[in-house]
Length: 468
Ligand code: GLU
Image (tube, rainbow, N blue to C red; front, top):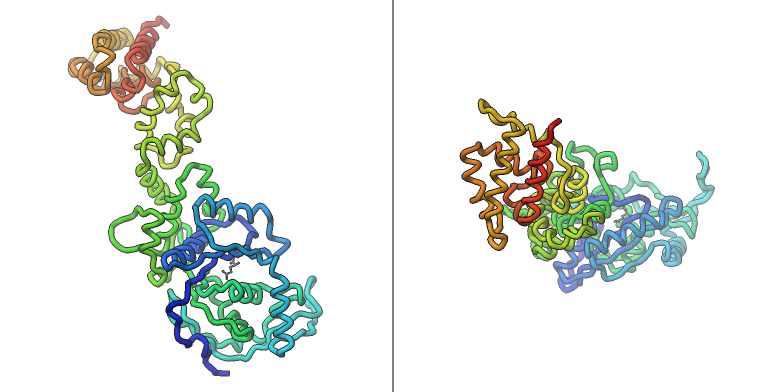
């Protein structure tokens, strides 16, 4: 009963190439928690010039679907997580069968007659003959873990010779694929002693284990769909950058120390240390992810940013004649604001985008709101129109070839000083954008150019002059 497991004590072959794997089950959309496992296995392999393999654990025929499986590959491709081999567990049933037969032959497993208790229970299953001993394994995160396997009894390893259960399949596959570092979620800790017993029975070396702590939602409860756990392709479709997701997810439960928050994939590979992963659960926080994404967006060159942004630009705006001459300055303006590229569509829905490319429809009420800002002074729509007229007249004099945000500001500033800064800036802003809030009106006038700026101010002026 108390033979300590000897094979975990064998001396390590320092020259052995590290082989890790990501073994997802395509029985649902995988969220950040699963991809963190993939990333950590990937980092360990890449950092050590090892191999990173994928195994799709699709033996649960009822729950595994093509859609979930495809989503895994799409996500791996999007994250650019290259792998050195891929297997599907369902293609390996013959191998599992071979080991089952061998175990039965050697009397390490046996066909067991059962008394079905509920529907679906088998009359016969294959059970592992448990040697009932203490198994000790080294977890790279938690240190040594010892478990007395006696309580497990002769556990089931197959429902029939052609239907191995997870415990047998995972052990045979890892052995045959040469996996020597098993990196997976801590929910598998209770399975590991069983796996070690099977490994010993089939003569497989005992790999190193790293059981990762759970990913939690911000309220420290299970990270579930209801708590915002999404397939990562949702982030791709919203125009998040894959590097940002890699960066953010890698820092859930691990960090390289120091002040730096933003890393490339290559930097993380260099810094990664599986033994420094924390033992407690890590939190997935959407707000922090957005911040990390924005930081990665800001690292893009103008052209890279533009290429990404244009994938999400509303077609209706792209087809306008003004589009190509203004898009570059729109890129410069939105760069400070967007947290993911699809937000450009939200900007459009809020009415904060179209005015860059086409004249707004003015709301006379908004224009007149300026009056309220002029405390203690007599201002009505006529006097406001007059201010716009003065602005327009001064701007007319500014040569087109020196028209930019600074020269426009220099031109309008004396008027703002005499008529009231709030009033003048408000009136120009609303004239150019039709909105109460917009980017700096001087920047906007540079984007629009002289002709369009004067046209819009003129239009606002005439609306103010309309007799209601
Ligand atoms: N297919 C298992 C899961 O999705 C992983 C098994 C393993 O990593 O050993 O939880």
